[in-house]
Image (cartoon, rainbow, N blue to C red):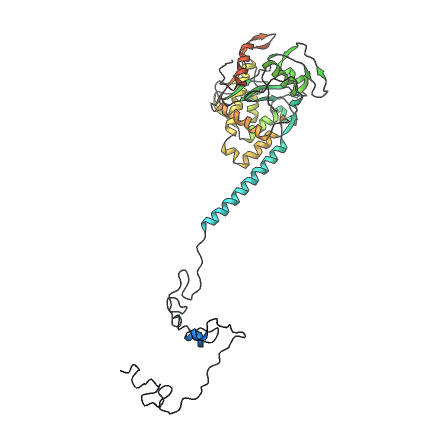
Length: 426
């Protein structure tokens, strides 16, 4: 049986043994034909496959030329590039590659890093800006014969009647008068303890003894003579260092940090916060402080807030009622300031810090961290994590308020040992 097509033989002819080429009847092979010119590369790559192992295309195709027969790319196939082929996934009919899908995980990661760096940069910048504004002017190393340290951190917070930096118009508006120098208008101890925070007001009319002390400016030692004065006289005599020395001597409690703010700074902080909302239980008026309040909830601006904490002549209880108002306002101020709306809002945070830090005077060892801890401890008192009280009073002497020594000793012992405070005061 002949497997060759009809009319053909194995000899390559048409059955009569004479044909050559493509079925020609001629007895001689076809002559050479002129082929179309193919541009060869200057340095054609040499095949690494031996000639005897090359296929049709490998052995005879021009270097750099692909006929397409082996891959089915001539007339279009699933892998072809012709117009009739099926384009690769994500491409187009002409074989051009399509755009890859965005890598959202990578973008989210990069975006998170950028935000984190921005937040850290802002935080660090704010820290150094605020730290540069703090006035560290009180040197507690000058205080002598100090009590032993306790388990709690204690702050002596002082509101002075300093009119530093105030214009004549501001003094008139805030009813501060024009007295020279400065005196303590309010004093309180804040004990930040693990068992709870305690705020203890020290009436400025408290009857205390001036102990032996070293002058803050002269360095001279002044021996104690048993001299008894009002507590605010200690500050007027030799400033914050003598005030700390006097408080420690009369209470037996060591003071770790000191913080003082004047009239102008106090009012500016309140205004920077947009006011402080207070619930005034009973209305009162005081011409000297400029107070004129009705009972009920209301928002106090800086001028009103200063009048509220300074009023004393409108109360029958004199200084003790005033100290209660001071405690109530300061804890409320801290509670409303330490909110995300203030801390995370630069339009409120920076004006508030700027208003307070410019007039805030602290001890040389007080860091911004210590200042923040004091602030949040005050906030804790108003939120129920602790208590506020006046120092226990047993009576009076020559118009001065005499402390209850037994209760004061018990109170100090509880604070030193970080125990819940059970002592009460009026």
